[in-house]
Amino acid sequence: MKRLWAFWRIPYVRAFFEREQGCIFCELPSRPDEEALILVRARYCFALMNRFPYNPGHVMVAPFRHVPSLEDLEEEEVLDMFRVTRSLLRAIRESLKPHGFNLGVNVGRVAGAGFEGHVHLHIVPRWNGDTNFMPVIADTKVVSESISDTYSILRRALESLGE
Image (cartoon, rainbow, N blue to C red; front, side, top):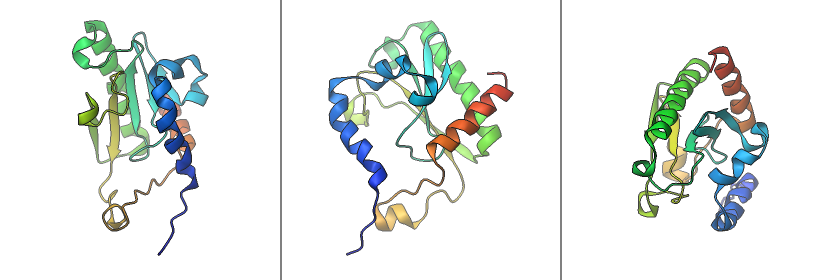
């Protein structure tokens, strides 16, 4: 049997149990941006890096208000979320040069929502060839860049775009 040491995943495992006590989307905005990996603070929402990304540049956009679904948001909140999403798409496209994106909102546990009480939108950059044999054969996803490096790149890109 081969072992793949993934000691960096233990925060994810621990967070699964800790998150039952709180909501990261309610708690993280009270922390400094760099610590919380917050890229943008807008009037009604904020964007942050996913600490356990599918790909480099995996970002989430969430309203400040704790609501479970898009239809529970006020018009201003929806517009703000999509303005921020548009800015992030520009910054990611400019700095990371992806070939495409997956955008998604998981509403409810059965749909895959990890935080079903606080709606949020995922932005996942995609590149030709970013999926290889590892997920299929070894059930392992390789993320090729550190979150802190990607965070710095995206912050600079947002600043250069005036976002």
